[in-house]
Length: 413
Image 1 (cartoon, rainbow, N blue to C red):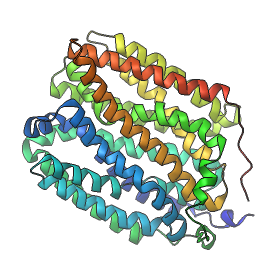
Image 2 (image 1 turned 90 degrees about the vertical axis):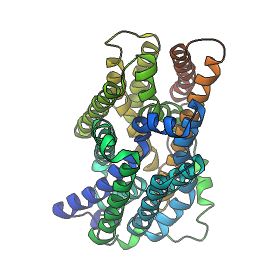
Image 3 (image 1 turned 45 degrees about the vertical axis):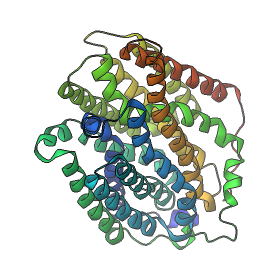
Image 4 (image 1 turned 90 degrees about the horizontal axis):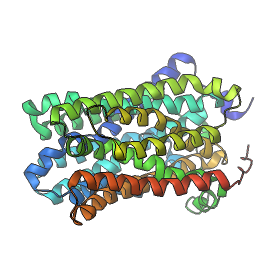
């Protein structure tokens, strides 16, 4: 039995650990996605353009991404409990600043602090899972964490739309600040101590990232996460709402209902994937094959979305949500191919890549829509053309995944 195996948790404790991490990630994902619902209120109150709205929402991803390098070192040195619990308090402070904002600059500061505070909500969990759960459970745990995250996005749709008339968007952020404080307390008080071998205080913690980023196999999958997965999250977190209203002509309440169904389908897709992963592995469906299939389906659906109109066009977004679930397998697959002492840095290095892509996609998609609108086309047509631009970018990443046939190096014991 390996050292890691000896630290596997008994079932009741394993469930409790998962629920604590899942609760924190639920709140993290809710903060990521809420702007898709409150966007009309922010535009009305602060006079934001599409580019400004995209940049504001992307501030979350900028600070989130900037935190990944130091967070990886901290996770490997201090452990998941101490790092995640502390940063969740920062996220709560960010929600308070956002709720108090009276100008765009304050919105940016609040959004930036939220990004910093939730930057480890998923990575802390995935790193801890490597030491506390059996290898065969790792991909399942990722899928189930994404169920929790998508449930957070689900809550930011119809439920948030329903309470906005009563407490306003500022009240939503005050409630979230309180919940983040509770999540931090749960992390500190409910998680057990990590096994001794999980802490890695090496002499060159920063240069270890060169080993991670210098791995060709990391980039074979990473280029897809940078484009395909990141673009999907950018759509989910912001642009699907404006698409429903401006391209398909829906009212705000109808758009919120579509977002609710979209995130419900995504959550159910992740749940099904979590149960199916062991069966897929036993039947020879590798992570590479699943990610390729997911990408091909997503590109085909995005092309259809770009041209579709009519009352049923929104259904294509539900199919896109199901197709996108396969993208979630990449990060754990690549990170577990690297040596165990690099676990925290492997996960955060990959997350940095994804977050950078999410920032670029969320910001540049809005800028592209604005640019295409300036050519004289209608706003809806600009959205459609921007989607086709994104399909072309993602197709290039698919070619890299298919034809760059590097293999993983054997991870150290």
